[in-house]
Image (cartoon, rainbow, N blue to C red; front, side):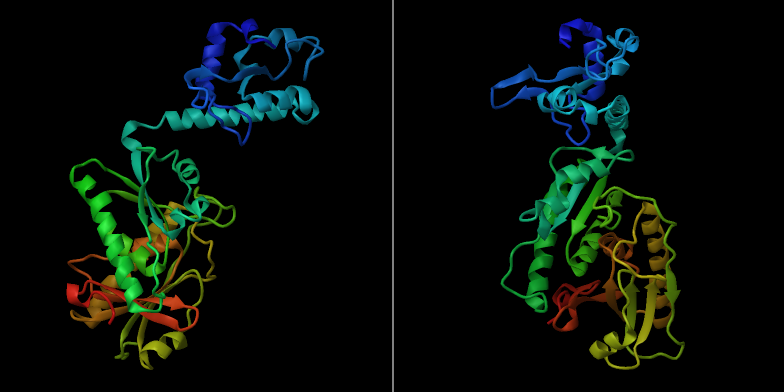
Amino acid sequence: MAKSSVPQRVQSALWARAAGRCEYRGCNQSLVGDLIAGKEDGLYGFIAHIVADAPGGPRGDEVRSRLLAKSLDNLMLLCARHHKLIDVDAPDEHPESVLLAMKDAHETRVETNAGIDEERASHVLRFGATIGANEALVSTQAIFSAMPPDRHPASRQTIDLELVGSTYRDDEPEYWQMQRRNLQQLFKERVGGRIERQEITHLSVFALAPQPLLIELGRLLYEIVPTTVHQRHREPPTWKWQRDRPVLEFIAKDPPADAEGPVVLKLAVSATVTDDRIERVLGPGVAVWSIVVTEPGNDLVRQPEDLAAFRAALRRAYDAIKARHGEGTVIHLFPVLPVSLAVETGRVWMPKADLEMLIYDQNREHGFVPTIRIGASPSSGIVS
C-alpha cells in the first residue's frame, strides 16, 4: 500500500512510536539517514498494513480491511527487507497476531526507554580483557538493552578499562602487579577525575575479568559515586536481570573459637571450596570463616536483590572477623564468585575500618596462588 493513502498525521505518529526503527522482531534498524548515500535526513522506512487495506491483500478481510486501512493500530514501520518478507516472500508465516505482537513489543520498548527520567542516566563502565578481541561478551548493544527500565545510558560512549596483554603468567606476581597498576591508572584517568568534576553521577558496571582484579575494581569504586553492578547470565545469555528464582540465601560459617592459625575468609558461591585446598596453601590449623550457598553454581545471581543479600552477609563477616581477631590481622581471601559478587566484595570493604586482605586466585596448574593485597602499605601491595 502506498504511503500516500495514509494521512500524514498518522504516518508521523507511527514514525514517532517506532522511534524511526524497523519494528520487525530482532531488526531495530534505523530508518533515518543513509551515511553511505550522504543523506543524513533521508527516510528509508516503509509503512506496512498488518491487515491489508484490500480484501485480497496479505491478511486482508472483506470487512476489516476497509475499517483498518488508516488506523495507526494496524500499521507497522518496517525496513525494505522485512516489508517484502511479510507481504511478498512469506505472508503465511506472518499472521495478524504475530505482527501485532511485534508492533506492541517494539513500541512498548520505545516508550519505556524514552520515558526514563533524565536523572536516571548512568555512565557505563566496562572492564575486562573481552572488550577487544571478544567484543560480543561485553558488547555495547547487550549492555544498553540491559539497563532499562531503571537506568539509561548517559552517553553512547562507554568508559573502558582494558586488561593489557602480558608475557607473564597469572601465577607470577609480576602479572598481578602490572594488571593492578594498569587498572588503577585507567580508573584515575577515565573515571576519578570525571566524578570529582561531577560529570559522572552514577555508574553501571559490566565486567569480565579475573577475580582479584574485580575485587580491586570494587575497592576503587567503594562509595565515591552511586553504582549498579551487573551480572552476565549464561542461561539465557544476557546482562538483563532475570528474577526467575527466589533471592539467594547466603550461609555464614565461623571457625571454632580456639582456632589460632592464619585467618581465612572463603567465599564459595560459584563452586565448592574444601578446607583441605586452603590448607595445602597455608598449612593446617587455619581459622576458616566462610560465606557459601546450599547449591553452588556459576549462574546463580539473577537479580539485584541477590547482590544486596551478599553485601549484607559480607559486611557482617568483615566485622565479626575484626572483632574476634583484632587489629593487625591479615585476612586470606579465597573467592570463587560470580563476577558481580567479586566486584561487590571490594565495594563492601571499608578502607579505614576493615582488615588488610591478601587475595588468592585459582590457577589450573598450581591451585590457589596469592595475588594482591588491599589495605596494605604501598610497598607491600603485591606479593613478592
